[in-house]
Image 1 (cartoon, rainbow, N blue to C red):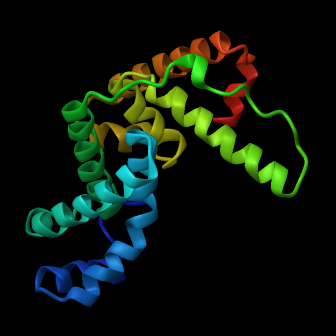
Image 2 (image 1 turned 30 degrees about the horizontal axis):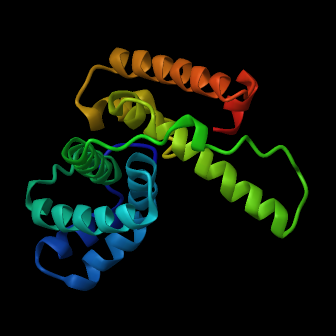
Length: 194
């Protein structure tokens, strides 16, 4: 994910996709479906919504391929489409927030095995519940930074805002998430798990 523009292999797939080669586009989808699904899952709050959104996002990507600017990284362009789609979805449905009382206390066990897997799944659900309580203007940069591992400059490009705005939003998002965790009785150092 370093540099600008697509690599030679990816550039060829993009050209072939623009020419209607479905196999080439399928390969592009396979490369980015994990990142798009994860972004949609974190922003929208559920597996079913994320699957539906991912499909709609790739339809948009395909329809907009002719407008892709090869001087930009393809991954950044795809994630910008995904982020904008998820924000549109959130605005349409005005996400119902999960009451704090419904969130289970944080899992503290470090045991391996099925119990650990269940606790990890529970912990992921709790993080998702907390994320869903953040305003979308904080949620998107937080997800792009910590789940997609993008730089502030890349996030600024995706969200079409100055890099300083991204840094401010990330700072405020971490503070808000910390307050939510404290309300839940979770210490501030629990943010390291997010």
